[in-house]
Length: 261
Image (cartoon, rainbow, N blue to C red; front, side):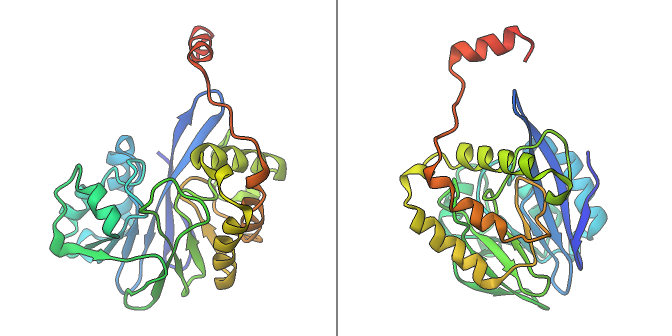
């Protein structure tokens, strides 16, 4: 269990990770945005549930939480979604129509506690108005990130993630070479259809993020980008010309098991 860390005024990342055999580890991040109407962002994976609930409610009282923003329905983002809704009686779940449908495959989501927020729409959460901005690449059709103009933080869901060999909170804690290697592995492996998308379309989405000029980019799967955060928009537009990541065959998998992992 790793301690939460502050990235901006009243804004905290709750970090954890999942193993990627033979590669390293995949960070898994949730957020807490305190303020007039406190908002939680994603809820880590099921395996993180106990420690997530312990850490998140050290930062904010359950009855104070007004919003739970779910970027998309994948289980590494929704591991405690219903536990949060049960413990936070005043919270509304922020999703979209597709996300609501996908969450409904597993959960009985109370519909009177749902707020649908589509790409490009805004939501007033008291002392700030957040804007939903879909990242350039995503693996779920329900994905939205969001921009918080009060702190300058953009949350990018899966996009801009990085696999690591060691846990670090900020991208500048890594060497540039390690950062790029982990970045391009993660963004090719997770968004496996990327090479079917023209670079111009990826650039078009990246331009939307550049337009709001975030001071920080927090990703669901990597360290926080605080120095020149928009460099990741430049990196992501280079991905179209790259070869797909090789995924292990069964024979390679057996060989890895025989070698001890």
